[in-house]
Image 1 (cartoon, rainbow, N blue to C red):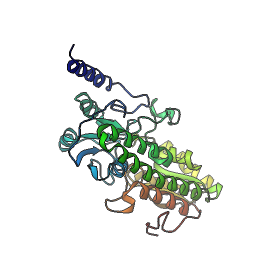
Image 2 (cartoon, rainbow, N blue to C red):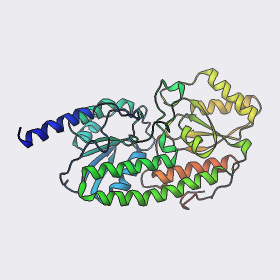
Image 3 (cartoon, rainbow, N blue to C red):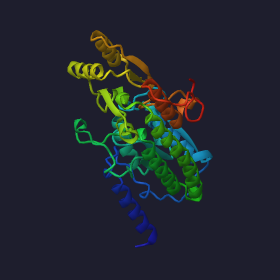
Image 4 (cartoon, one colour):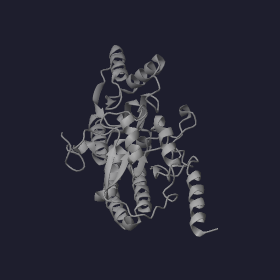
Length: 336
């Protein structure tokens, strides 16, 4: 058999294999960074399409000026509920490379990712190579992993390394460039991770309880030693029952929790019900502020970056619960 036809058949076989679910449970069955080795030289800047803001930001950090990175999900968009528009599908099809978070975060887009991969598109869930032993698997989430990995900065840093690896496979001529960018960015993330560890630790132990709208902070709780209680489950598609709300109200009153937090991508309705319920029992709990959970801040702002998002959350949580945090955050860019 001529070498050309043998290579073509081998490529088709490998492409078919990319449609199998990943060991990490990432949705969409995209290929791992090792599965696609496209040695062609792309036309710069080539086109990358991403999903959530957290994915978009780290891909931009790694890709640098070699690619245009377009994020589909803007400020305040809930990725759990997101359905791609016709224009989104067009952008995905026109992209040279696609990155998404995975672990069923973008569950309603799974068929789109599978279709793209079947047609030879390099499609990567950036959580692909995270050790399954690290991942949270809450019993109420029907046997699936918790997708909110970005809440642990050290884990999200591993995803940065994966992005560099994947881009190096697509654009082999610039593989070292992507590795260099990733290493520099990961140094900044290490500083952020240390800031979160040191700052959250200043909250008095009896106040170190984070109450939020939905269960997006599980990895944050584990990484930074803070108890987390939430009204809704892992997905915002879940509904909180009256019993759930009453139990949480009683917990807050008993523990005298000073603050509860709303989230930028989740309705405030349940949080306000908690505040009202606590007031009826004689405990005035304040709303400590708005946290970024499934979406970042506005574009062109510090909070509209991954580092700014986490810096904002850590600083706000710490100050609202009685700890000591820098008024302007780690990098002096937050507004006190």
